[in-house]
Length: 399
Image: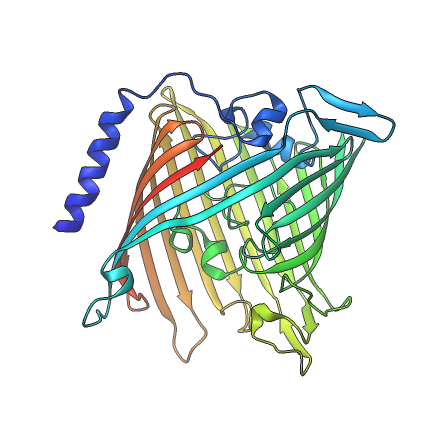
């Protein structure tokens, strides 16, 4: 009852706050400044989800600009400083399936202030070169995008490394959690099959080659499962991603296939607990499909997602099993977005299958386009669960 009261109180406060939310607000992170546009020109309903224009900007390697440029022979950079700061504060509390005595950690409630705080230098480095670098570094996320156009096709090569965002961090255009940071819900493993399986997260160093026509996006990559000095040589795994992005029935739609294949050989892959004294072989076999649709219904914005991932064998990177997720977010206004998600996991790594189901509800209150408060609550069921429920209240800001 106490936890329910907290959830209801936060939601009531958010509903009341919508009435006094400013009708006009401007985003200020470096991409918005570079394009001289508000955040929601690229984002759909709330940060970090992208709309069609945002996908185009991302596929362009962050090189498009609508501000004054410093230009000369072999120089073309924005006159504005490409600096952003992103913070996430969270309160989390959970009820475990088997409670500890005394209760500690999430069962007592954790004030994660901050859960995330990062400075980003990101944007245009040249006419055909873009970048995104997280600080303080060095073991954090970064990438450099070399891009150009051939007819109507925008193509590029991305060199990247990440401490947590997975093998598709190089380039992906979806909101479905194929990249850990590109998702709709904070409870990522409960609401995204790619996150539940591990396919969409983890330490990675790699290269991605991609092409985008606006209707079709395709990418293939080479990668190893570590960020600091992996000694893989060219014994690398592959990643692949194909998506079609038509307009169907008035909905901006993405239908895609993604996965990883092959294996990596390395001695120094710290992410995997290897110490460099022997060469290990890391299998990376997983396959996923996803669907995303954005459109207007009754004067409100709606995004629907569905995703399925299968992992055929146990290995260090992933756990054998089947993973399914579906979600919907309804934007009652630019300030208020309601979300509901379902996730189902069948863990096949042991002698018998273990199933876990999760239902998650949330409310996103956009105080500004670049500032939001989100209460989120998940209820778990079936024998494989480790928790009965979990509450998160998150404050996000980017400026």
